[in-house]
Structures are given as structure tokens and as C-alpha cells.
Image 1 (spheres, rainbow, N blue to C red):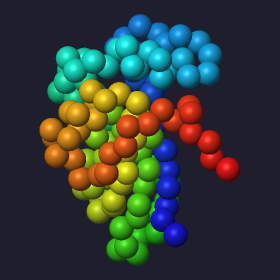
Image 2 (image 1 turned 135 degrees about the vertical axis):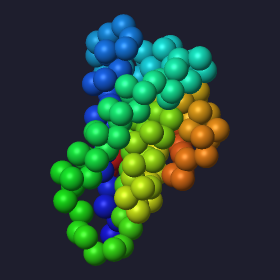
Image 3 (image 1 turned 90 degrees about the vertical axis):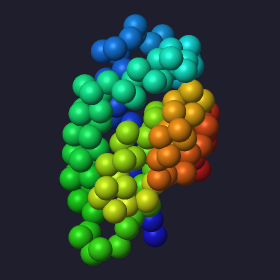
Image 4 (image 1 turned 120 degrees about the horizontal axis):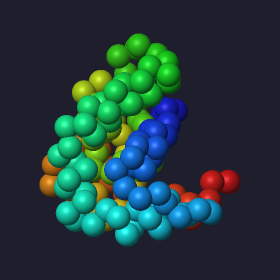
Length: 130
């Protein structure tokens, strides 16, 4: 069975670089649709500060998962993958990943960067897990 985790910790960082999201269910997602246009997605992905933070967060998430060191790559789910910065760290550690994000602009940048993970356009606030 594949290990699945959410690496959406970066959500807390977005408020530091943009206006606060609207309150209520799905508020963050409405804000991201409006904020991450093509220009903002590129700025986010090329910021050395954001890249450094994403690497640290991803490495810490892997540490907290305490995945077995058995040499077998795990399948990880990156919810809110943005442009795939966290996914690069997952790939460097030998894992496979699937990333989903609500921003088409962010996913377009991830595709341009030729990230290793599979990418899905999805609003996770509208996904039902039963």
C-alpha cells in the first residue's frame, strides 16, 4: 500500500507574501484562484526565499513521516503542490508523487519546469473522501 501524506504546510507561507484569504470554507481556494495568475505563479517559483522554505518544509515532512528506510520508493500526495517545488525534494529522496493544486497557472509552471510528479487540477475543498 502506498504511503500518502499532505505536504500542504506551505499554505501558511502564502499569507506572508499576499493579502489574507477570505474566511470560511473554501476561502483560501477562492483567494488562490485570484492571486496566483501566471505572473504571480512565476514570481513564487523563482523566489530564493520560497524555494529555501519549501525545501526545508518538505524535508521536515519526510522526517515526520518516518518512512521505512527499505530502499522502496513511496507514493506521496502533495496537496497544494503549487509549481512542484516540494515535489523536487520528494523526487531527490527517491519517492514518487502526485501533486494537485487549484491554480492552473501554478500547474502550468510545474509543467514548464518538467517536474517528475503527476499533476492534477483540483479544488480539494470539493473532494469527498468516504
